[in-house]
Length: 441
Picture 1 (cartoon, rainbow, N blue to C red):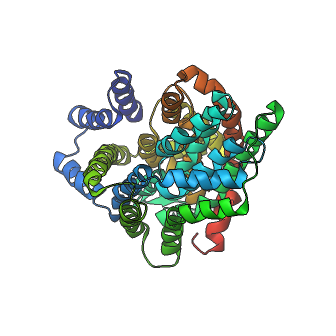
Picture 2: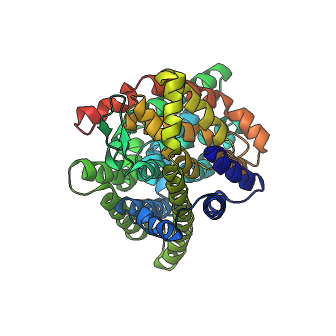
Picture 3: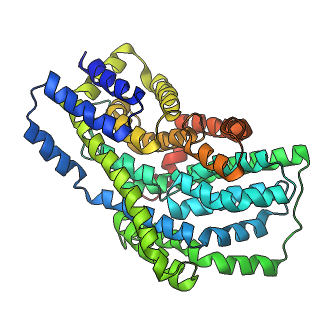
């Protein structure tokens, strides 16, 4: 009854159109004042200790780095490089958009930012080349989801924060450690590259089937020039991943280094941003960071209430007793997350659902890293499904097409992503082979 009461209060508040962060906070306080005897000072203590985590600092730094790169013209140079490499293939500019999204995802950590940076340039360019606008919109809107799967990923940081410190046991009663940010980042590399390849194959097939125009093959001199122009942005991938796994700095320190590096190349190397424009970028990043940190704060209190009422433990016992098993549980989780992903933002979903589902998954023998990647893929698909898919809204604004038309245009790539979700759910090796090879898991 307690669980039903908590979620009923939350559902009622969300139905009123209230922001998720405020609804979470009000749910906690309504339950505290009306239905429990937990002292308020323990909530205040949990509020501060819950967000007093070094890992959380990675979020504003990655956001700042992404904003410098988005405003600094790095995306334009990456797009030129991608187009010079694959533009002569069937659906070359669409394929270039997938490649550009994958490259930009590796330095931004944000899916809507990836769609905005790549789509604002390539969607109009594809229309000028003779592609139907729906083709470009569908490719960019779905490929932009790679922004939260290919590391660094803000959603992966959220999952690590939401599950860190939780005392959970495996199927044999053994204690299980939560997944670290660094391990999650490395686990996202192969799934990210696989999904990019699958989306690229879908793009090429549809272009070949409909005989869309192809660009002339770029000479090697043009390709080398495009690479040299984009190399400063591409180096950020090497700095982040090489620095983390070379033991030079932690993921949080890597985020800070990436913000400083992005500032240097945007202002002094590429000179696309003047010093006068820097405060605007800082202010925009601060606003976005404050929003996410406010959601985290309320989600921490919500998770505390769930834990204090032992709701995850009761849910775990019920699922085990009911005989769902690992396969049935993962299928149920995917269905729930896909439904919630249609109406909520990924960060909020992870912060609410991870503390509930994570202990159950571990109890059934699901690896924490594998479960985290599965959650991220679900969030990626949620960004491309109506009525609240952020990528669809960004693509709609860029293309001037209606939301229904953008959704219809995205279905071939969305179907590809769903097929990939099934694979990553039931083939754990896709997520775990690289971390295990490197001794991280």
